[in-house]
Image 1 (cartoon, rainbow, N blue to C red):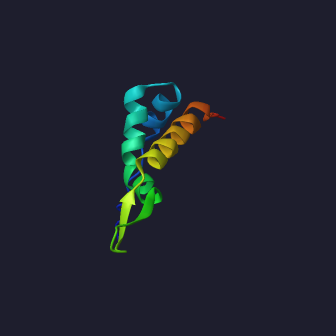
Image 2: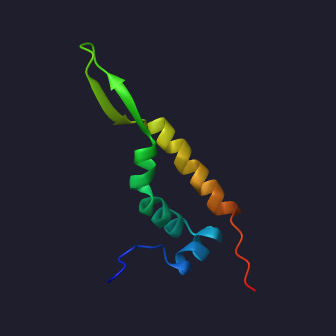
Length: 78
């Protein structure tokens, strides 16, 4: 049985920790669906109907936190 789990290549992680903007964007794109899911909020219209929408401010804050984590990530080679 095959395991088709997608992963971020190690080289991309190393490049992102060194400040490569393309690599950082690749990581953000990889997690975009997950970040969008975390950013969902309920919105009610004037009739009381409920809609789930992505809170763009919250999504931006989560993306900024991920970029901060990438910048502070330390790779130790033994």
